[in-house]
Image (cartoon, rainbow, N blue to C red; front, top):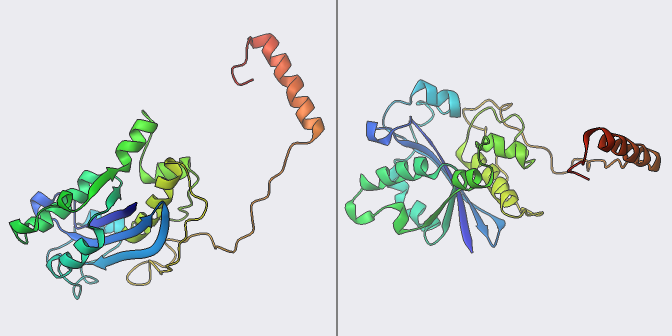
Amino acid sequence: MRQIVLDTETTGLEPTQGHKIIEIGCIEMIDRKLTGNHYHVYLNPQREIDKGAIEVHGITNEFLQDKPLFKDVANEFIEFVKNSELIIHNAPFDIGFLNHELKQLSPSVGIMNDYCRVLDTLVLARQMHPGQKNSLDALCKRYFVVNSHRELHGALLDSEILAEVYLAMTGGQTDLGLTHKQDYLKVNRDEGGIRRLAENREAFKVIKASAEENSAHKAYLQELSKSSGKLVWK
């Protein structure tokens, strides 16, 4: 089973108002393991980026001046994602932008659903955790996925984080098999903005309760049960 975790960054919120994609990040998973194969590109939108959008992703108009247009990379992008299941958080946003870009090329090109299936992890999260916050940051906290100092959004980094969240949500994966290494903030970003824990960090210590502590806890629960009735967690 081939799945592609995908994220985009844009000049604004509405493609119908002329906003464009400026970054695409994709990470490949086969049989729930990350292969290290990925697709990443910055794009020249040929328009100004909204100030609010720059505050989210940190990508500036100047940085994108020499980058390719969407039409220049459309074929290689489609080749990378076709015949896969796309995993996207809040899929209508990204798919809406991608379909808008494809429609600008030629009607014969079609839309994303002609090439891929789509799984929306936001919908999945709302089904699993109704009434709770289900943003990507909230899911990272809920599933203990490290996204320390994620001050700026980035399409490839967010795809990597979403992959970890998706695997945790749907059964877990102990070996992500990440082989690609990239400085996500190398160009036009604050290098202190996004950092991940080192792979060679020390293992977390597990401190178990002593026999005396377990005995004291059991006695406390017994007293609590007498005063409050049946304890549902016993």
